[in-house]
Length: 250
Image (cartoon, rainbow, N blue to C red; front, side, top):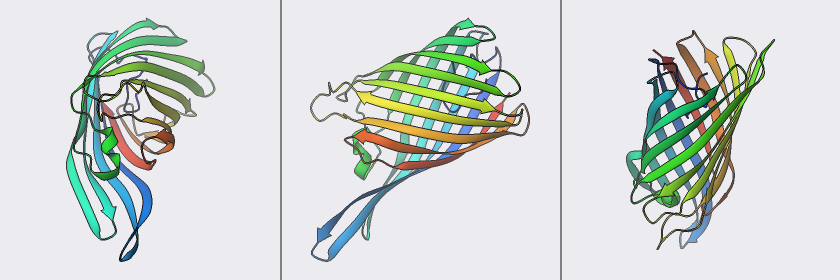
């Protein structure tokens, strides 16, 4: 079972390496504001490279991580503020405690270092220290023939050791495979703050919906394209991300 740039309840087979490399473009339109020269529009743009890796250490233990590097633009009329750097680096270890032909269950522990490079409207995403996360994952094969349909859910608690509020993070996925070459994914992501931030630490909620299509050239190579829409949130401007990526396994 391939992952979609995020950990899957199904463990990576022992000795197998999965690499997903994605290019992501995010944009949000901000409120206009008045100046002596007239009304000025503003927006926030971000382009990131998102590299996700996981390796099957054994049949039940998977190690992995991801690194996001990007550039942001905060545009206010003719003025543009830019910044670039790593937006997040994360490593994880995952143990699969349940697997059969019907379902799979895993637990994952992760450590992450969010960045401070974001400019302009998305400064609320910044973190001044590091995060740790404990998550439970469950996946189930709903239909096996004539098409394959599966679902997966994940829920985790993220402890933020700086001033930012701790978070409850969840993900739900439905996948449909009409053939060995095509995979349709519909994913939902949510992040809810526990509102225990300190001083001026980050405190936000966001809910995203992400449809995508994966085309497999072979058992080792695939390409994915999709869009991620922020449909609800608190304390941040909502936007949309377009992405395309290449999956490869070795």
